[in-house]
Picture (cartoon, rainbow, N blue to C red):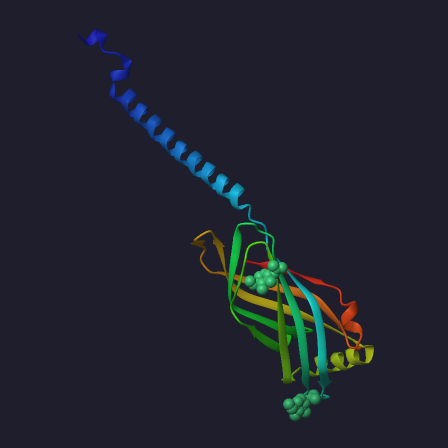
Amino acid sequence: MPASRGISDSPRATRLAVLRCFIAAIIGTIVAAGIVALIIWFVVRPKPIEYTITRAVVRHFNVTPPPGATVNATFNLILTADNPNRRVSMRYAHVVLRVLYGDGTQLALADVPDFRQPHHNETRLEVRAVARSAPVPDQAARELEHDIAAGELSVDVRVRAGIRFVVGDVLSRYYRMHGICSPVTIGLSPSAARSFKNVPCDVEI
Ligand SMILES: *[C@@H]1O[C@H](CO)[C@@H](O)[C@H](O)[C@H]1NC(C)=O
Ligand SMILES: *[C@@H]1O[C@H](CO)[C@@H](O)[C@H](O)[C@H]1NC(C)=O
């Protein structure tokens, strides 16, 4: 009986019903994934790791005059990494600190051994970066001599590292971390270390 054939039996209505069902399934999946992500976020509560230069001393600092200027210096730095997270621990690899002067002239470089940082932990990395007859442009040498006379040296410290985040048994992939701590102003008088002001680092991951 064609007259009793309801509108819902028409092919068009069937297609619409399938489409509605399909869209509802997609929305449901998105909402479920969003809720799972939110729960993980609230359980883990990730907070950024903060990096700070908390001590900087320079010793045996000498500049030969231009032309062909070179620098000798020993930088003793402490880089403090503060991980405030209660559930996230960290693994660090290929950690390199560079001490730069002026327009990016590298004075010294130091490799830091790989290390692990537990959750809710502050790690102080003591780093010794030595400049041994490091070549510097004439202009930089003149500015360095000026700094020696003024009793204060300002450098940039760049940090590079591969980091992995660990939550429970789950390890993230390696991320490249780049940080710049600038300016790190180091007094040259023997008593200057006590008045050093912490320098926070800008970090990109
Ligand atoms: C740096 O040290 C080297 C020896 O390690 C020495 O030959 C050179 O003259 C020193 N340079 C300066 C600027 O003192
Ligand atoms: C942070 O972790 C390091 C390495 O496990 C440990 O040596 C250090 O004592 C810890 N620091 C604090 C403040 O718990």
